[in-house]
Length: 289
Image (cartoon, rainbow, N blue to C red; front, side, top):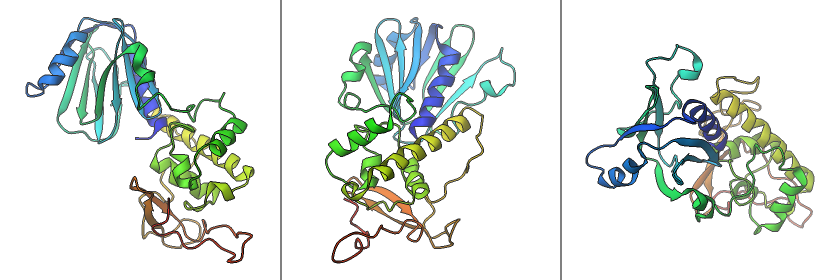
């Protein structure tokens, strides 16, 4: 799940639960740690539900926060006997889940159930942004106060990497996952293996503009308000399928030691000509470092 989708999920849950007390928390009996850690939040009020990149954060009135990361498939579902059949009361996430992880009965009769196996942390609210996974995150890609000059400055100040690795570096900007990265590079016509040091500022600026447009579209779709942009991946997870623009088969390769895959069109995203003796960057298979 990408950052914009988590943000939409947070906004939808917040609208449903903010200001309500949690009457009861149920977890599977064999998850004793979850029982110990979660059940003491029963009887407390939910202050807010928010996101930070791909992290979903619940803040409670007694200074405790639940922090989730969708490492694997998950599903948030709502039961509300008093709700109408409006889109606002539809399932909160479309991904299929596994067995229930926790069920929250809220004041007013609403019941929220989380299924799946996300990363889960229980932290003091004032320490959430000091956690190692969150403390060094850059601005959210959808934060409109995050300007293009600041984006370029952060990229230039980071350790030299390929544009593929740079886009998913949360220390530069958070909220860009692997799918959004691939779609951004395709729309910007940049090969994933292009070294950032070879790209002019205009290319980096275009990346932010495109990433923000795609993020806004993803957020709107998750909120039930699709924008008139492509609602299906152009390259992501489409290896071997023809490119929508030129018909060339989509390729895929690992992007660095962390194992992220990059899908790209070798024609539409051909490496730029370089002002050196060999004229072009070598083909980038197994070289996305």
